[in-house]
Picture 1: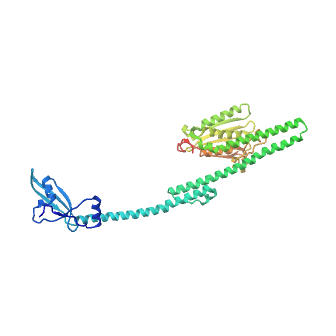
Picture 2: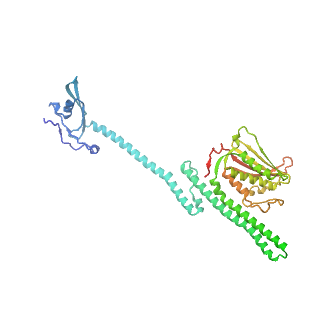
Picture 3: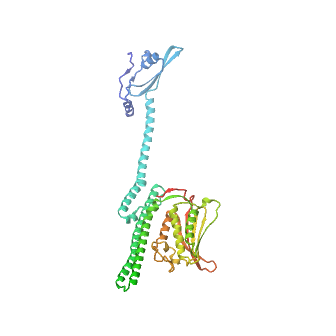
Length: 424
């Protein structure tokens, strides 16, 4: 029996075995039985005896089946008594490996099917709708009228549905902004025509003036119309910048009582020599934070100044302007009341439209007002996520209108979520 008990490697049993050993680049020798020959001719037995440690080895038989052998030295003290050689039956390792590989192959197949199915599902439920939304957005960017063709995913409660609703809201807001800009431009053109036409007709009348006093009177009328035109242009300029300024305004925690106190204090000084007066009343609350809102103090001061000034325009001599504030768990409500003739029922909404003005004949500001104050106030309150509306004060006993009331409702800082900083 030759010392080497192994031959050249035969062809491996199957593809998996060949692939595995090609991958690890390991040469395997062929196992041969030595029968009754000296067992130390087995290389693993010889190595175990020489080194004194166990020696595992992976072999093949002549049929290409794998065999695992383990040579374990047997010692008593430091003396080697022998070597125990244990081997698996040919093919047992191949069967175990094949079972495991088949299981892995099944799992990989299932994973592949699931991955393909998931990809198709995502393509149908996510990628497809996203492509439709993208294509619709491109159409809207070229023609705003295409907003009617936006796909409707409002019934979905996932991210695609949220994006679809956001697209619809965005295009709707954009369309309203374009419509408002067009309407604003038309209203401005219409309002500018009035003082221009008046100044032109008065200038033409100068040629027919027979005296210096007539000419001076006509010149004063022209100057008055030009001043009115200048005020109108300034108001229009301020209104046109309002949207951009509201988008950039800084929001911070404010006590609405401080703003009202400052506004009413200014008007008290103005009315010190007038028969009219202004009164501020604030409902007491247990927690001072109930009057805390999140907003811009300058813009809110502008709103309440407009409302008080509007009330003064309609207040009779000796009348009182009442500013009242009260707080609820979620809102602060401020009302400005006058003792004037009230508002026609069909004009309660129209008074907030741009360039609407309906002042009494006795008002010194009649003809000098652009009709933008209440419109601007409404936009400012809307930017604070509040509301403003008008109503008539009615006597409970007689049912007679005894004045007008403007009400502003703003969310408290707690109801707004405490968000501070730049609005955008």
